[in-house]
Length: 280
Ligand code: C2E
Ligand code: CA
Ligand code: CA
Ligand code: CA
Image (cartoon, rainbow, N blue to C red; front, side, top):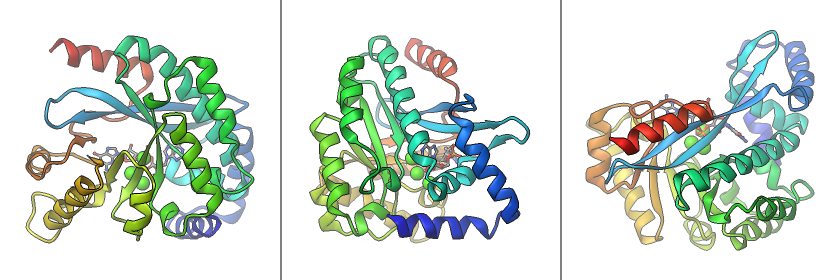
């Protein structure tokens, strides 16, 4: 997991024109971002391709930097991972989603789910005490099954015993697991099948090329087939066109998420979106 964090940082340091000094400044500002209430969550609906209904959404973090304005998570999450700030940030995300679920469980019914992104570093040895999370869910009266933890495939390549134990503790509490960005890594099918996952999220790079001739159609078909045989549900990310949606439905994909339906939005807007969608 540590190696993955380093690689990601190296990858990100190249294309972004941010000097080392800028990085240091940003890293320092990030350490106080939680305390200064600069972080917000936005929520993107996940749509059932069979019924068109919305019973799920994904929480995505936003950082409103006092001078720079909005900083993308693609930029600051790798930085938070390399400085260790990811632990406080990840805790904040978890508690914020728990608070939101406390309200939404009653409002949208017991089947409503919110997923959150968890960095591999949060599950690395000595990092997150998952027991605190489980207790927080219980204290808030939030059913574990209304929360989905999204982890990346990189975790599955060389799963460490400690990570497996933490994921298992979450599963014991009813929390569901999803593999994010599926298809971009090299997960071992055997590890996948032993993980007690609920969802596979097909990376948007595959969705993007659907509806065009080429191998990606077959790739998504293979992913859906594999998910079926493992008993998992499939969520396609980055659905932007009706054509992509039609192909995904034809391939038997369960859910779609993307700009075709909605962009990530603040909680009150999501509430209005779901109310409108349920009234229709
Ligand atoms: P991700 O988990 O793969 O999230 C999906 C990203 O795709 C989001 O970008 C979302 O806004 C964007 N997206 C959704 N629909 C479409 C679409 O139709 N077209 C396109 N082009 N993009 C779409 P965002 O919010 O900028 O997040 C980027 C990444 O940052 C996430 O990728 C995730 O890896 C990370 N991230 C976001 N929030 C958190 C968090 O709370 N914790 C951690 N550890 N990572 C987070
Ligand atoms: Ca995700
Ligand atoms: Ca993803
Ligand atoms: Ca991603």
